[in-house]
Image (tube, rainbow, N blue to C red; front, side, top):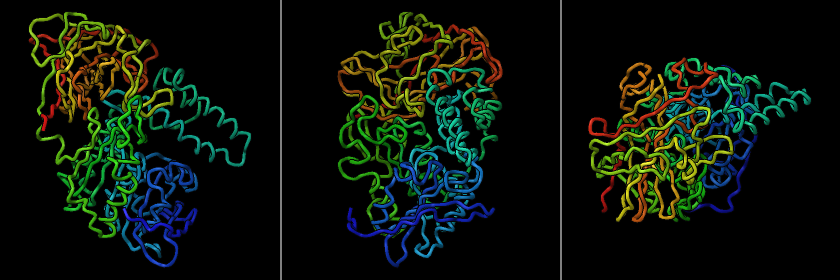
Length: 588
């Protein structure tokens, strides 16, 4: 991509923007030096415009040299901006007002694009729902639309791992609370850092959840407490929900995600909605790119896997870096330059295993064949040394599998789509240590004689009986390498009382001893199981502390201090076929 190397830029710090209620938000503004007017690229984040995250997604100095005004703003109540920090609230109105302000700056040509990741991916969508006239395009990276599908809950289970985020965000709150009292501030920071450092071995484990001790000890007034009191309540979380508001978005979106990202599925769903149901022709020109990345992690290797030099965001397909790719998108929509992007396929995916980038026309892939791999065993699928296996042949009359789920000794989280305390790394990690546990059922195909590509949504249908009135079931898709390395690809959880939520039914407890069919959404992946590898499905009842432990009592959420043991039975016979649905892509 051509770049005007050597062009000087100007940087203005702490530039004020007045919101409609009188609150002043401040931003750093990077722009080409000299007289002129240029399109604006805006990002609004709560992590500090002057800190590394403020310039991590797109280096504003480099982008300003390419002929843009780049504005990096502290959101309301954060760092240099005025107001009270109330996460996710006001981002629509503040975003609208900031876009209008930015479009009228003397060095702005009136056209605004937005970019950013995660929370500052959300600030884009929130503003766009109000249809600010100056907004022309967005590039949301790794963000959500439904807080009940990855942010606060997943399958009815609490995303407990994300408590780490609340603690980190409290640092600036303490700075404001104790401004002018260095001794009190020092004590408060010392205590807060202690909570963060001890979260993995103490904080995550503390009960009851309704009085979550790490927050209570810090005096944190977190959304956590309201969602524990009213779990899985969309109405309560309307301010951070985009599901029924995307129809108001009129601008095209370049959606960027990662196979190991905590917001993967919503990134895909956002693209699909805009591409197929966008309210304008421009909105229907939206695009999607998914790399083998974790949340905020775009370099190679990811977890324990080396996906190749061209997998990193700095060298996408050895063709372009992620910053230049976004600038190419904005060049089209904000500068009217024909970059050729709209003539290219709307989707670009990284296919793991083959370790290649590939263009696609739709999601799910029209040519993918949904194929059932059924669970089988001789009655002991426990551990990777058991006799569980997967086959495309349906089950006959065969024995069930059993395990004991003890929430005082849960299966611990090991890799995956995580955003947790540092002890828990995201991405692909060897699952062998947890597959050695008796409370993990392991079903594996024979060694593959030829490559098998799986690209698309993954679903598990599981017939199960529990001794508890409420419990959880977790399923994980794994690629077993010839060395025995068990690479996790994607997983999911279902809380029994929410088993029928997708059908619009209210939560209800289960009857102990009765068989129920559960649908577990494992979201999506793209992976070639190479010849010599094996396809594996792990089934258990916990992945803690990523998801909270189900206490198996059936009591109201968050009240339990005592935990009960559940005896779990997984059925896979003719009347109760349990299986995973894999979208198999035929060889081209």
